[in-house]
Length: 376
Image (cartoon, rainbow, N blue to C red; front, side, top):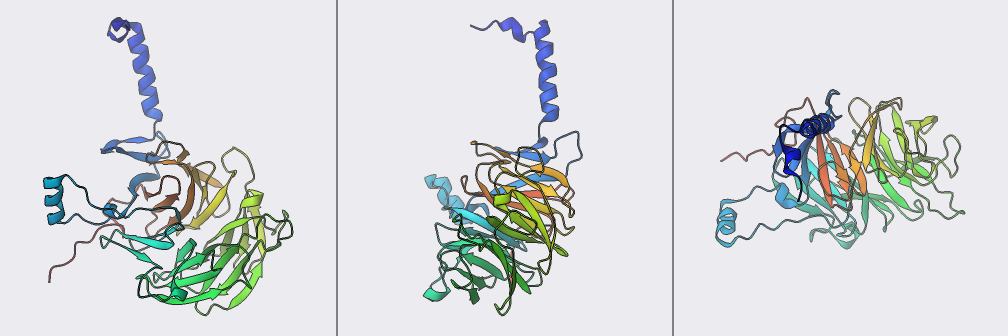
């Protein structure tokens, strides 16, 4: 049995323990507020000025659909919870005005969690679509400012385009252009689509490149990149983030970010393999915010790092863990930043999307707020 005097206020060890606990509390990334089991995390940790706060996690349709009165009564009487359509193997994420699009490679659809409208639906498997309009293996996704959804279908080797409600618009690409399709990024105006071909690990494959298309017509405008490790060369590229006047290519096999102008001219690169901040181990996807800052998700580190437009590290968010809690990731894959600066991260292993809000943005501000339907 433990000596109870250890916890006595007269024991010096008690005071030492108290000092240690206070010190740990001061270093933790936990705010004063509690949201049930999901703690309010702030980044960076105190005493640094907070920049982002963990806001919420989306795991299924029940996280966005309001509970109806009859469902509440049924739960009360039977104890049965509401059915929630979750994620089987999520990969990419895109957001438009409170509507969250998540590609699910196992379910062969894009799942839509609409927080603003409080509803859930899928894109790519509707009975309204013909076989040639449906998805087979959606991976990277992107939206333009109108909410049109661009989906990279790895199996069909096509870019499939739908409106924000899931109506099929067009498709482009094909096996004659793509070797191993992995992602698509469209500029906000919906004018250009940047498609990444990962090429493959085979030594004979040279198609480690970015293909640029007219996003409206599907015309292949030009391509850039070839396999290698030199400036402007790519090895297992993963994604493109479209900045204000730059393209940031996640050069996965070279453990770096390569920067090009909008016409594919090489400008610079930064990062490298290593365990230090600013380095990469398994970078996957990236996105930019309104200020041109770059957000890069790393599947091995279980976090995302934020760089300014010049490639200087600003901060990182998240940590790798086997424990599925807010701010913990095991196999993160997709990342995007919405119109209000909220950050969305997909984790394949934990089958979730976590959302981080700029600290200065109020909980009820922006598009990610449920709008009560107006009564007629």
